[in-house]
Image 1 (tube, rainbow, N blue to C red):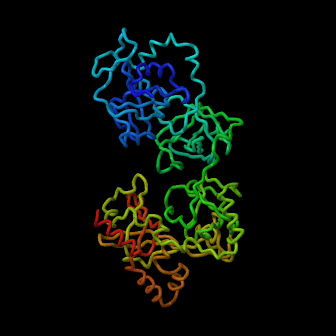
Image 2 (cartoon, helix red, strand yellow):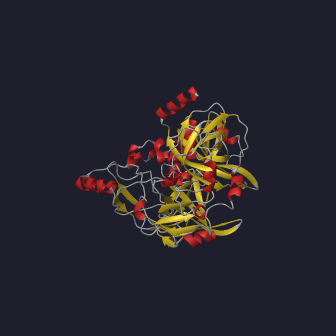
Image 3 (cartoon, helix red, strand yellow):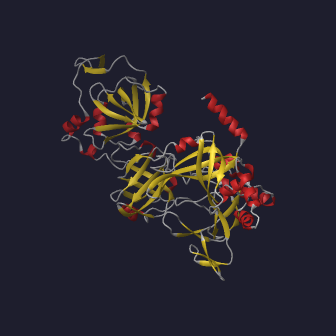
Length: 560
């Protein structure tokens, strides 16, 4: 293979802007000039000694620059590329999808001089010659390009890893590996609908695609789970890490002009849905994180279906709890999993993991006395991040603007220092949906959410208390199970103590709960009271102090 610059290569690139990878060959060797970082990718110029092109190195190849393989003034061999128009730019950019370093940096930029008496090519440094841009070359060739060259842009499939927001025309061949439900929304700009899909190509690379309104209506019935499609005329943008569900720096948007065509009889070339199963006894670190995970297990128990009211739109939806087990542990007990609109549930999947689990359960699992995962996790593990984002209370109270844009979450260690005994500490709740019920004398308790009357109800905590640490104090709002951990008894028991003629037991119970250290996961958000904005600090999770973890945290802060 040649290790010298391929003079005239840029003219060939312009003539064939989107070749098949197999047609590129190994004879495109170009010099890298003006290499600069641009976010998580790099921009540069490529030169063949006669002409130059602006180029982009995608994030998938950024490591080659970081590792020093590709350097300014060095040579690279381009093995896959596309020449595209960049939005809001008047020039074409060479998108280098695949390349390899050929040589270390040269002493200077090379210019090519062709001598008439010699068919060979002489490379001389710093020789001033006129270079042409891609636009100039295209203009000169516009009327002379052969018909076969103009027709060379047949359907070329791009790997997902090579896509980036700067590419113009591309076509991908992907399998639909996840499909969300059609969701309807209403905001200041009006009403609309949206749904998401996850796509996987033959390399196993995944990307999330979103469709809104007309595009959502157009493609919702077109996309079917497991089928393979050719997709083109979409757009890409940097993925929002908070909401992305696949490992890709970008996410795709399809509009009503995008093209989606089923690849008939070609499904075998695209891999099936890939799972990364997490054993049940290793779920702790994922609790209260936004990462979606995969689990596989044998169904142990199925509860009856119940109705719950969704907070976001007050719509009543069905809910059912199931208990599953694998060869590490039984159910979650204090650590629960929830499905979302894009979750996939496969019953009796035909996979090696499924066969292995079935074999274990048939031979020994169904006779085993399995423990609950909750019993093996420390409180800090259940909370997922009780020892992350640790702050003192004055960090929250001295920053009244915290949470104005969106709620923020912190961890802290504090003690309850005061609780008002004259406040309403609990409410009557429906035993099925936990919503507030209204007492109907002689007939029971009416639940508006369930639209039925039950003969009994239960009490659930809803209270406010002051908590203090070395920096100061703040008022927390506590609910149900988290309040019970602080008070030390269920709401029904506290109510019985309070209703006695002698309320000394009630007072003693609250006194015992004060000045006991706990670790809290707090959510801070604004609230409006009498036309005045105030902070609302809500306890999302509380656990006893894990002194080993606290000691480790203190040692880390001392070293910092």
